Amino acid sequence: MQFQFNTDSHIQGDERLAEIAETTVVGALGHFTDRLSRIEVHLVDVNGGKGGADDIRCTVEARPEGMQPQTVTHNDADADASLRGAGKKMRALLDSEFGKLDKRR
Image 1 (cartoon, rainbow, N blue to C red):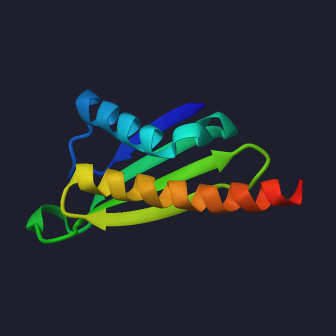
Image 2 (cartoon, rainbow, N blue to C red):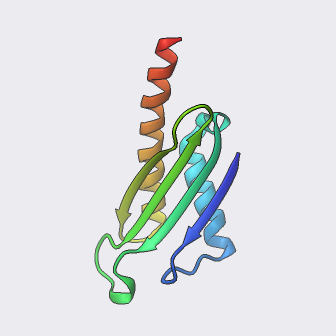
């Protein structure tokens, strides 16, 4: 499985943040990772340097093998919280999608 991490110009996407993103999102997805070919994470500061509540948006796109890509978005106050929220949402989405697929088999 490939992991790709992207940030906008307002968030410093250094190696440490990339490791945190991978650990947080992949950890949240748990046993689903063996059914995914790729995970892309995008962190964006919605309103630039202005600050404010819930202004960090995390978008996670997971590409399950043999299925259409699945995407979730979560806004929160900081990068860590945004990554955790998006990871939980993606886990719930994949649980639902794989559950439907497994019921048909």
